[in-house]
Image (cartoon, rainbow, N blue to C red; front, side, top):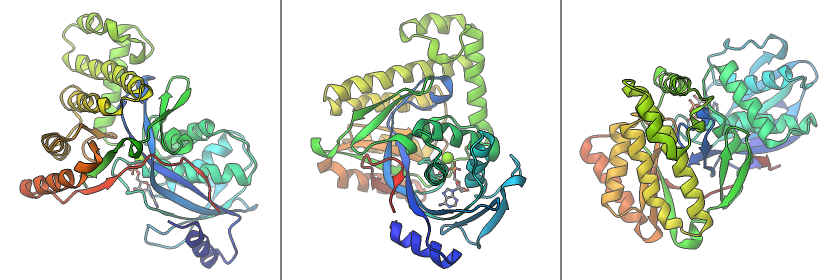
Length: 384
Ligand code: ADP
Ligand code: MG
């Protein structure tokens, strides 16, 4: 998506040039799934797919919004009338960001916005965070708020949690705001401390494929809330603030203390082992042992499928087929119940693997998946 093209469309819609153009990417989570609301570890990296927004300030309290990806014209909202939970359309995401900034005391007085995105929506690649972060960054620059990336991420999360009403963790927004090219972001969701971990697949003759199953997940749906509530119950039963506080070596003892709470036990086991997998992947990448993260990714899938129980037949088929066809590792990524899986493979096996997955989907009668290569890319930035 060219900055130029988005700026030109802005000029057509609003009759003036935009003050600037910004971009924010979607993300893939390499490892660390459903750990972010348990104060744990995650490790996303940014996709080359991004949302690009051309933006100008206004001083009359009006927010005008237009998306190239949604049918319909410009939507005009009054900043003073913004009310959490009042908007069921896509406009809730950018309006929520303006609302969160104003709630935090920042003097945002209006904006004209046109945006376009190459992030697939509802595919577990976080088009919602890309949309929030690009607006937050644009307003941060234009209104000279001086907020660092992690703070913008927090405000975007607040917009999504409270204004849109989707109970998501902090990972997606932080990834979109803070990732760097050629790196994965090792993020501690408790204190938001972050480390850029070199993750240059091409240099090692490796590729990471994303397989979008085309099964739409429903994030704000009940299953996500149930898992989250189950994790909170586990932490309460074990007398800790969050499941992050159960050290991996003490997992068996903790599970034993959960008595007949079988479902909570499975959720706790996933979260505690998943945090340990993130730490193992960080160690392997730091040691330059990228190929050896493959089996850890696959372990993560098994845990999400059997303990957390948020996979689906399409995601399992991607993983099983890829592994049978020689992948180094594979797992579902994102919230679950659809969305995308990732496959780590030798560069030389990409075509064979892609074909194997496409054939398996056809044979099972599933909608054809969308397969693409994920290159660790830049986080949010000004592009025009
Ligand atoms: P995901 O973040 O996994 O893609 P979500 O359901 O969290 O899925 O967010 C998708 C929603 O975000 C869309 O339904 C739409 O409301 C909004 N959205 C994302 N990208 C755009 C866009 N380019 N234009 C308009 N709305 C968008
Ligand atoms: Mg989302």
